[in-house]
Amino acid sequence: MSATAAAIRTIEVALSTNPYPVVIGEGALQTLGAQIGAQGIKAGTKVLVVTNPVVNEHYGATALRSLEAAGFNASVLVIEAGEDQKTPATVAQIHDTAFARKLERGSLIVALGGGVVGDMAGFAAATWLRGIAAVQVPTTLLAMVDASIGGKTGVNHPGGKNLIGAFHQPRLVLIDPDTLQTLPEREFRAGMAEVIKYGVIGDAALFEELEASGERLSSMASLPAELLQSVLERSAAAKARVVAADEREGGLRAILNYGHTLGHVVEALCGYGTYLHGEAVAIGMVAAGELALELGLWSSEDQQRQRAVIAAAGLPVRWPELEPEAVLACLQGDKKVRDGTVRFVLPTSLGTVEIRSDVSGEQVLAALERCR
Image (cartoon, rainbow, N blue to C red; front, side, top):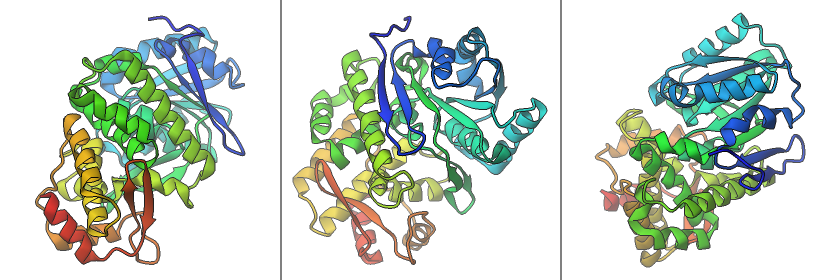
């Protein structure tokens, strides 16, 4: 479908310095070159598109044509981009290509793919020549509603997820829902976990809309186009509001980690790739809900409603068999630990959360036991 002005919606990430747009619309990928040009990046600029083999097969040529039509000196780098590839070695491969193709300080890196590509390409842009411009073009639901917006970039360390990284805001985020047509169903469901997260942390109306959709949430084929558009716009707007208020996660932005603290434990201890990121976040949200029950923060009815929506989306809800000591040790390695204390984002109702740092290891383990 060709993109038209009427079909494209722009949401601003209103940072005090270097604000940028999130452009959403069917067929928007065909306008990539024009959209980049609209950000003041001149024709003739060198552009390196970083993508993975599957995305390149479907969308690499479209992106390249659009960039070349707008007068950019564009080329493509295809990298392996599974979670196990999210390492400094892969970023070095991007750096090597940037050197070989003589990317300068005025050059641009475009991340075309899911969250793994976005994180690595963004981190490479943040660190090449002390920082060059980046554009995020997410092709998975999870990356569209979460990873592509906000400037968090990085790679994994054997000790934990995303321990090596930098804040590097993009110049533009371009979201084309047409690219979801080739997304595997499991990946689509994983992205829905982040959408549910936005409902729980700050948008009760969105949660109710998702709740009413039932099992249609579990498949791109059964999700109405108007609901998908609403999900993309509302999720992007929610992320943009939080990022604008707290760019570097000093306070409010921490609420976006709902489900992630315990979800990262699942990813790390089960081995990256056993669960997709969104699947681990889903388990983490159920576990955080149980922890909120343990602390008397919200009702069992709210927890049951959260669990039901997550299950309706085809996502896992049970805590895996993990050694308690390993869980507590992994929590201590989380990026959000302050002065040795783990901070948890916990729900107080459907639509509100709070950050707690007074949770004991015994309370965590008791909650997780009920999730098994």
